[in-house]
Length: 230
Ligand SMILES: C[S@@+](CC[C@H](N)C(=O)[O-])C[C@H]1O[C@@H](n2cnc3c(N)ncnc32)[C@H](O)[C@@H]1O
Image (cartoon, rainbow, N blue to C red):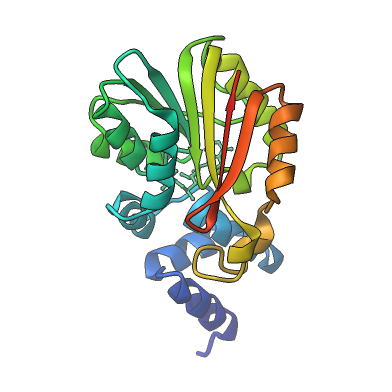
């Protein structure tokens, strides 16, 4: 029997490298048609899950440009304790450990937490949400977000949370996707329409509203890098 809706979903999933396992997950979700773009955004990037997500976020080259920009900006050393929010497959955590720093990752995807624990042995990785960080005030010296900020509905609240868990003088580094990349493989539809793009001035304004100081923003390798201090 023909199943035009199923074929349409299968085609979209295939264009994101997803397959039968993911189509089965969409069907099992029981969500209505209009929820598909949001479900796909979660599956692929906002809360990645499934074997394809493990493959993508465990790959050496995934967001290596963001990882590099953040680590160069933070200049971590053995006296530091880094928190990465939305750590995905844990490659930034792994690279940060090489500086001698203590390293903690947080992600709200159980699949990503498990992958990060495998890819970054030596890091502590916890399941949790960016807007309610399960850490005491002043726990860290640095906080990072790589290709996560775009998905946050309350960016000021999350930056405030970063400020709270950082010790005085601690650094925040955020790498996010620039609006110019909308519609490219870096920010394809329908995912691009599910998130938030900012100008550099808007990013700086968000950090200032969160009470951060010494705010600097710049374009970097097609994306945007925000750094600020508590
Ligand atoms: C596009 S992936 C990027 C992963 C990794 N930072 C990288 O650069 O490869 C976004 C990650 O942020 C996580 N994430 C998104 N929103 C989050 C939130 N509110 N709280 C915790 N994790 C979140 C997702 O589960 C996902 O692992």
